[in-house]
Image (cartoon, rainbow, N blue to C red; front, side, top):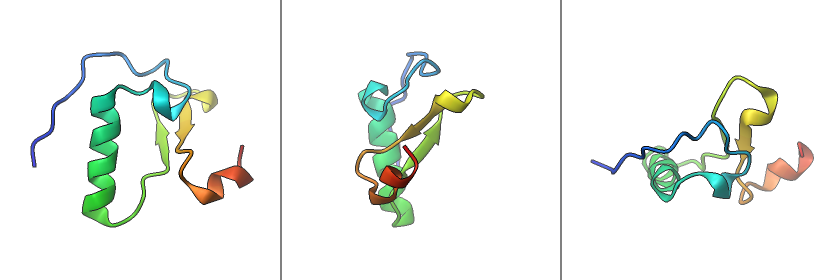
Length: 63
């Protein structure tokens, strides 16, 4: 599998939809490959750099 990359700096993303489309496609593809939804992604070392997918049912317990 080969996917397009992205040039944007994603470290300032604070919501899943702030990620570039290519990054979201990458995460979706990983989910398909592993058979499990990718629900949490970190884009930096800060606590607020952790992104939660709005499609994840358990996320409501954490945010």
